[in-house]
Length: 130
Image (cartoon, rainbow, N blue to C red):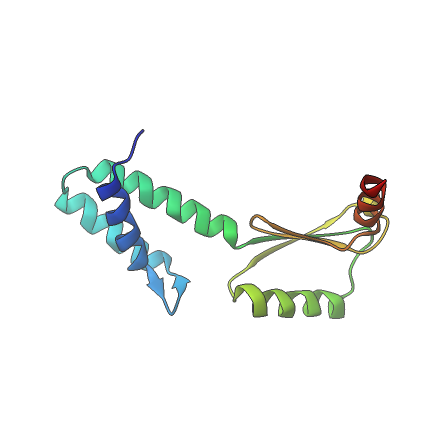
C-alpha cells in the first residue's frame, strides 16, 4: 500500500503524541488509534498503516539480544544492562543466548546496532584483512 506524504506526516505527528518523556507509551497509542478510528479522517487507513510501521520500528529498537559463549554471571549482566540503558535509555527488552561458536566475549544486538566483542568476530575480521 502506497502511503501519501500527508498521511505519513499525520502519522508522525500522531505517533509523537504517543510519547511520554521521550518514551513510547502504549496507553496513549491506544487512545490515539481509538480517536482516529472514531473520527475517520480522510485517508485514515493509510495513517493507521504508517502508525503501525512506526510502532513496529520503535518496538524493534527496544529489543536487545546478548549472546555469549558461556553463561554470564549476574554482575556482568548488570554491567551490560547499565551500559545499554545509558546509551539507549530504559525500557529495553533483554534476551540472553548462549552461542558456543563465539568462543568467548559478547555479541550485543540492539535493534539494528550490533556490538561484536567476541573472539569469533575478531577472528573473522582478521581473516577478512588478509
